[in-house]
Length: 117
Image 1 (cartoon, helix red, strand yellow):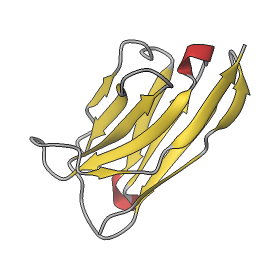
Image 2 (cartoon, one colour):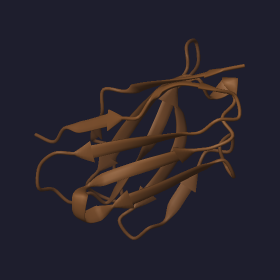
Image 3 (tube, rainbow, N blue to C red):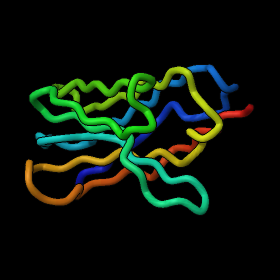
Image 4 (cartoon, rainbow, N blue to C red):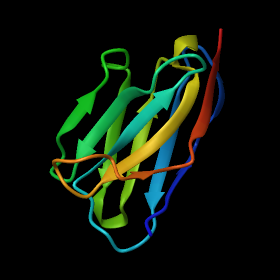
Protein backbone atom coordinates (compact mmCIF):
# COMPACT_ATOMS: atom_id res chain seq x y z
CA UNK A 1 0.00 0.00 0.00
CA UNK A 2 1.29 3.41 -0.94
CA UNK A 3 1.92 5.93 1.79
CA UNK A 4 2.41 9.64 1.24
CA UNK A 5 4.33 11.49 3.93
CA UNK A 6 4.34 15.28 4.01
CA UNK A 7 6.84 17.50 5.74
CA UNK A 8 7.77 21.17 5.89
CA UNK A 9 4.71 22.80 7.36
CA UNK A 10 4.86 25.28 10.22
CA UNK A 11 4.30 28.85 11.33
CA UNK A 12 5.50 31.76 9.22
CA UNK A 13 4.82 35.48 9.08
CA UNK A 14 2.92 37.01 6.21
CA UNK A 15 5.22 37.60 3.28
CA UNK A 16 7.43 34.69 4.21
CA UNK A 17 8.12 31.39 2.50
CA UNK A 18 7.79 27.70 3.22
CA UNK A 19 8.62 24.58 1.24
CA UNK A 20 6.53 21.45 1.58
CA UNK A 21 7.73 18.00 0.58
CA UNK A 22 5.81 14.80 0.03
CA UNK A 23 7.48 11.44 -0.42
CA UNK A 24 5.66 8.34 -1.58
CA UNK A 25 6.69 4.95 -0.32
CA UNK A 26 6.71 1.89 -2.51
CA UNK A 27 7.84 1.25 -6.06
CA UNK A 28 4.98 2.78 -7.95
CA UNK A 29 4.81 5.27 -10.77
CA UNK A 30 2.23 7.99 -10.51
CA UNK A 31 0.64 9.83 -13.41
CA UNK A 32 0.32 12.91 -11.23
CA UNK A 33 1.00 14.25 -7.77
CA UNK A 34 -0.12 17.43 -6.14
CA UNK A 35 -1.36 19.46 -3.24
CA UNK A 36 -4.76 20.37 -1.88
CA UNK A 37 -5.61 22.32 1.23
CA UNK A 38 -8.47 22.80 3.64
CA UNK A 39 -8.95 25.70 5.99
CA UNK A 40 -11.36 25.58 8.94
CA UNK A 41 -14.91 26.02 7.76
CA UNK A 42 -13.92 25.98 4.10
CA UNK A 43 -14.04 23.45 1.31
CA UNK A 44 -11.19 21.32 0.09
CA UNK A 45 -9.27 23.44 -2.42
CA UNK A 46 -6.86 22.71 -5.24
CA UNK A 47 -3.43 24.21 -4.65
CA UNK A 48 -1.24 22.76 -7.39
CA UNK A 49 -0.69 19.57 -9.33
CA UNK A 50 2.02 18.23 -11.60
CA UNK A 51 1.98 15.31 -14.02
CA UNK A 52 4.80 12.89 -14.68
CA UNK A 53 5.41 14.83 -17.92
CA UNK A 54 5.82 18.06 -15.99
CA UNK A 55 2.52 19.75 -16.77
CA UNK A 56 1.34 21.90 -13.90
CA UNK A 57 -1.96 23.30 -12.75
CA UNK A 58 -2.53 25.88 -10.03
CA UNK A 59 -5.46 27.15 -8.05
CA UNK A 60 -6.29 30.76 -8.85
CA UNK A 61 -5.50 31.96 -5.34
CA UNK A 62 -1.87 30.75 -5.46
CA UNK A 63 -0.87 31.50 -9.05
CA UNK A 64 2.33 33.50 -9.20
CA UNK A 65 3.21 32.76 -5.58
CA UNK A 66 3.47 28.97 -5.32
CA UNK A 67 5.52 26.58 -7.44
CA UNK A 68 5.03 22.82 -7.65
CA UNK A 69 7.83 20.52 -8.73
CA UNK A 70 8.60 16.84 -8.57
CA UNK A 71 11.31 14.22 -8.67
CA UNK A 72 9.77 11.31 -10.51
CA UNK A 73 12.64 8.98 -9.73
CA UNK A 74 12.12 9.56 -6.02
CA UNK A 75 8.30 9.77 -6.19
CA UNK A 76 8.50 13.09 -4.40
CA UNK A 77 6.57 16.29 -4.95
CA UNK A 78 7.43 19.72 -3.59
CA UNK A 79 5.51 22.92 -3.06
CA UNK A 80 7.47 26.16 -2.78
CA UNK A 81 5.24 28.78 -1.21
CA UNK A 82 6.32 32.41 -1.40
CA UNK A 83 4.62 35.67 -0.42
CA UNK A 84 2.44 33.79 2.02
CA UNK A 85 -0.77 35.40 3.23
CA UNK A 86 -2.87 34.72 6.32
CA UNK A 87 -5.55 33.27 4.04
CA UNK A 88 -3.08 30.55 3.03
CA UNK A 89 -3.45 29.11 6.53
CA UNK A 90 -4.75 25.56 6.15
CA UNK A 91 -3.91 21.89 6.39
CA UNK A 92 -2.08 20.98 3.20
CA UNK A 93 -2.56 17.48 1.83
CA UNK A 94 -0.39 15.66 -0.66
CA UNK A 95 -2.21 13.58 -3.26
CA UNK A 96 -1.24 11.17 -5.99
CA UNK A 97 -2.91 9.16 -8.71
CA UNK A 98 -1.78 6.38 -10.99
CA UNK A 99 -3.84 7.20 -14.03
CA UNK A 100 -4.55 10.37 -15.98
CA UNK A 101 -8.28 9.82 -15.72
CA UNK A 102 -9.67 8.94 -12.35
CA UNK A 103 -9.64 9.99 -8.74
CA UNK A 104 -6.75 10.94 -6.55
CA UNK A 105 -6.31 7.54 -4.97
CA UNK A 106 -3.60 8.24 -2.41
CA UNK A 107 -3.54 10.97 0.22
CA UNK A 108 -1.12 12.06 2.91
CA UNK A 109 -2.05 12.78 6.50
CA UNK A 110 -1.75 16.54 6.04
CA UNK A 111 0.62 19.17 7.33
CA UNK A 112 -0.42 22.41 9.01
CA UNK A 113 0.63 25.72 7.52
CA UNK A 114 -0.11 28.79 9.61
CA UNK A 115 0.57 32.30 8.33
CA UNK A 116 0.45 35.06 10.93
CA UNK A 117 -0.41 38.64 10.06
